[in-house]
Length: 89
Image (spheres, rainbow, N blue to C red):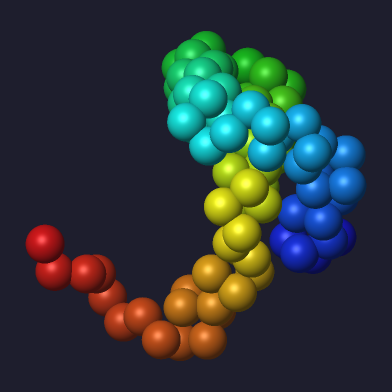
């Protein structure tokens, strides 16, 4: 499955509810999932890590959907050779 297909799947299943919740509350859900991923990474439990990586990706797609961002287009800077090295800070 391509990223665009996954983002569309998340949209079909959840976007109406996610838009009603709004970006700030949805972002908090996303951050909670990132925290769960951090805990899973620290635990060394590979099955839990895989589950939490999936949850983080799903919530990232949700945020992108309700922010009207196509993640596949957004990552083109990484996939088309537009980035060389690191961004200066």
